Amino acid sequence: MSAMRTINRSPLVRDKVRHNLYKVRKQENLMPYSPIAVANQFIERHGAAGQIDHLKLQKLTYFADGWWLATNGAPLLTVRPQVWRYGPVYPALYGACAGHGRAPITQPIGGGPFGQEPPRVVGEEAEQVAALVDWTWDNYGSFNGIVLSDMTHAPGTPWRTIAEHNNFVVPDGTVIDAQQDWQYFAALAQQRGWPTAPFQAA
Image 1 (spheres, helix red, strand yellow):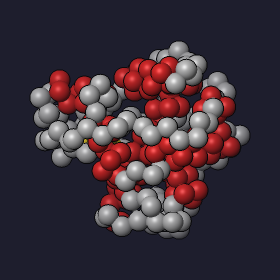
Image 2 (cartoon, rainbow, N blue to C red):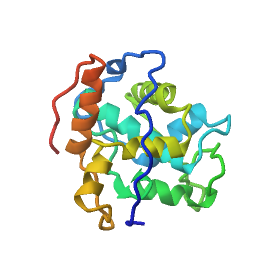
Image 3 (cartoon, rainbow, N blue to C red):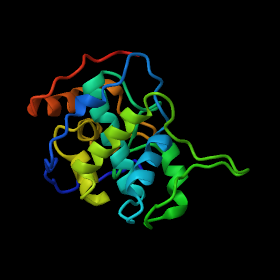
């Protein structure tokens, strides 16, 4: 899936009700979460209406991590997304969603074969992550997966920068590192007049 094509540009973000994203700032040294755990937050809080498919879930999870990075300086997620044809992708999340195809995902994913519960965001910071998920949904949830994919392909995005550097034939497994995402989303936050946090190298 490394051979890519340019997708038509779409408006970056439709600015709905302005939430104060920095209200969800995390405390120092909180453990990041798996992409599946954060994806399950979107499913549990906003999936009942059948408006979330696999492609859209990947992009919502990516945007949540990006805005968290901008306002906290450290990633929300345990792993970085890879550069795939239709935008940033978390391979573990891809595997968990593979059986759904293009169908809506309305129930948590990623449970084990022997009855293990699906990964979830738990602990003291769960309320903060829930607020972030709701803010991300308010700003991106009205778009389908293709439009969200187009947003990640827009000029200046980390995905586009890496794709152009590789003449749109990106080696398998290429990741978008945290600092690239921080720079991009911090610039978006500053355009809104929001404070950002310095990047914290791992």
